[in-house]
Image 1 (cartoon, helix red, strand yellow):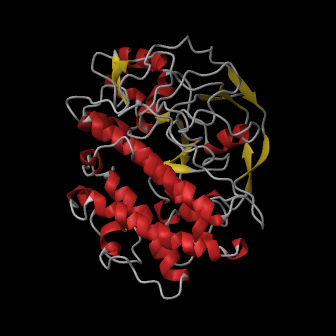
Image 2: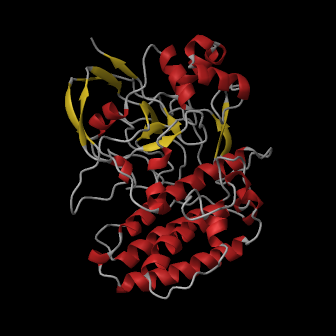
Image 3: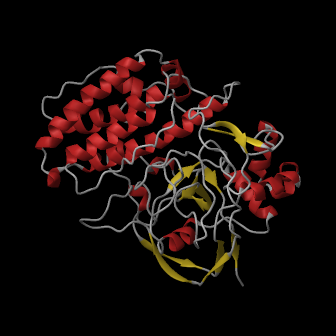
Length: 425
């Protein structure tokens, strides 16, 4: 399992449709190349899925929502695909329960790759004949969906390997030396005012998910945002100060989760607070790198301890809209957050998804699409919080200032970190 750079896989929107499709699909296969078959079939928890299931599900998405709906005379590859590889589309029909995806030892991984090759050949034949102006919206959605699952493969594999008592390294021999100190965190003062948030609408606009719109005005009160993410060293101070033993710092649901789950530190840290599990195996915790794999409950407790708060998603977007979309994404060989640069603001994009205090809810005027694809985002707008900015496992080019990721507040296996905010006045 030699260390290799991950593919820079986000194709240009100017490329032919078939080229864009090939690159997106090839990037996923390349990403999985270092994995052994045994790595691809196990499921470490109900929130994670086996790699094999991800490979088949994204393939099924193209077959179900593009080939079967837009290619005359297309014959499905396998009549059982709707049951085996459907994720959550109730209107499509029954499916394998999510916590039991790891029981699908058959079809085999070899057969899943054969399924991918069959669908890829059919998709390329269709796309090579298709006028780009006639491409259905589900194609752009499918390419973005492929990128989302490539990131999920990374996070799910990391969780799987972390549960192995041998703490195996997917990238053995990679450099793990501690970095230089992080630059001092500065407060960036933000003036009050009306800002426009959300993805722009209209013909010719870049792709955005439906939950990113409609674009609308939001009033922001005076506040400050930290210039970089919270580091491992800073979070370790919270842990050593009894942060996981002080109920006054926690939301009620968060404290109940701490007690029930026995949390005492971030997900991949050792009890001694000296090492963490990474794709290089167990390595010393680097105090200068951003803390990650913390839940929203942990993020909220930390900011209370730091006499601060989490940003709202609109405060984050207003700042992120002023800087280029650039950062440490999955195109490097290092699936680990890096120390912040000296630039201000730093780490808005890449490194770690950033928890916000905003509930994942519809924007004014939001309407989900009609049909099965209307289930993609809208039906999850309950009991979730918004994260912004992408991480070191996110494909480059996948995120933008308006991008709204969302997870329940107890989720820890994603590359999620913390940026401080405070009110002014």
